[in-house]
Image 1 (cartoon, rainbow, N blue to C red):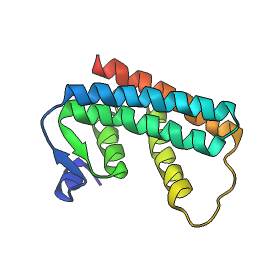
Image 2 (image 1 turned 60 degrees about the vertical axis):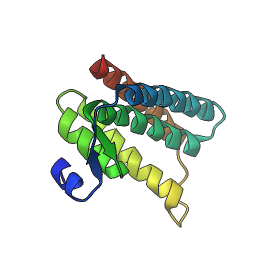
Image 3 (image 1 turned 90 degrees about the horizontal axis):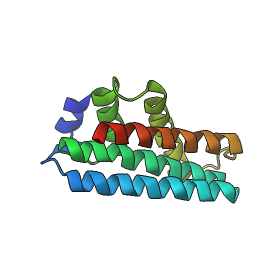
Length: 141
């Protein structure tokens, strides 16, 4: 799927650029990252991964707001960022955004208990969310 298909299916909606919402989304990304770090310190690794993804989601969303788009799907956010920013954001961050999107979905909506989230997985998720936030902030400046 690409951006055009997301627009056709209503998963993305063209709107006016909203720099104030982009700023608010970055602030939320920072908050979610700090929350992930606190959860990690308390050995709440599953929650830390979910919060790290939320940080990445809000970082990505800031770019959509700046560019004049609104999302109607987490998948569409990934499609947009992957297509528009693959040359400006390191591939590892784009891959992690999608991997955490899928993991978060399983953790939140899955009916079967998956294997426990390991400490190392949560640590990696937090580091990736931090790097992604920094990459997005550079683009927004």
